[in-house]
Image (cartoon, rainbow, N blue to C red):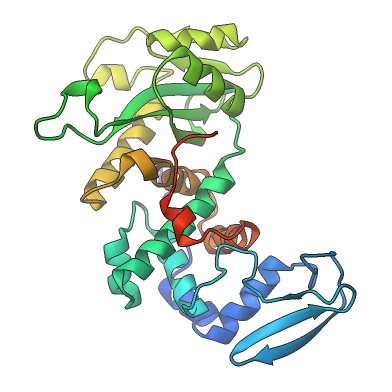
Amino acid sequence: MGINVVQFQKGLSMNQFIERYGTEAKCYRALYRWRWPQGFRCPQCDGRARSRFRRGETVYYQCRGCRHQTTLISGTLLQGSRLPLTQWFQAMYLLSSTKTNLSALELKRHLGVNYKSAWRLKHKIMQAMVEREESRKLNGFVQIDDAYLGGERNGGKPGRGSENKQPFLIAVQTDEQLEHPTFAVIEPVKAFDDAALKDWIARRLAPECEVYSDGLACFRRLEDAGHAHTTLVTGGGRAATEAAGARWVNVVLANVKRAISGVYHAVRQAKYARRYLAEAAWRFNRRFDLRSLLPRLATALVRCKPCPEPILRAASNFHG
């Protein structure tokens, strides 16, 4: 059996990371290139000419056309942060290079910051992952399954009716032979009902997808939306998870659940499930080039709008 070239590819080693991004100046230059790859652009008028000056330790850029003043992190998810760029880069490296997950508590210990700062860092980075994954649509052959995050509370409702469980859908795009997964969408839904499925299908599946799923009643909406739909009758046990048309969605689902339950002592599913699931999807969908993960994540951070802590904490799992 040959080596899986995706799993065994070389990523960015710790030594390489320190060599490239070990100082504040190196981080600043890299972030500048990723935010303005064609050179400075005024966020107000898109002008290119600018002057540069300092106020204290902060470098400002003033557009010569409209005289708008900005900084490297203004208008981005890093806006308002007092942490040095080296700690942001360390957090991005740790969260993108780990194969599973990294809790805010562990991030706190790695970076030497307090827990609140580590929590904000982690959730802002996960928010960037959410926004990058929001527009993804799957094509061709797609395997879909329903699942839950969370478990039963003491004294609460058992099973699917538990107040501590967040339903979500996981879908994995494969090649035509159903032998290799390519991309995944992992997203919370309000319920496994017709309304939620119609909305999800419209946003997440390209026209004419061929879809494989189990016999959950709401998956009939796939046919109403014009998709070829194969309902798999697999029974139970391990054989059901390895059936053609269901294997890869079950493999990815098992990895996601193991990564979340094995790292986090508690996740507030009702508010933050979208971020934790998007974190898993973001890494899975970019696993083909591990060396590019940090630049792509940093680019996402500088392209996303600011998200102050009140907005960060007032999260919702759902659109609208």
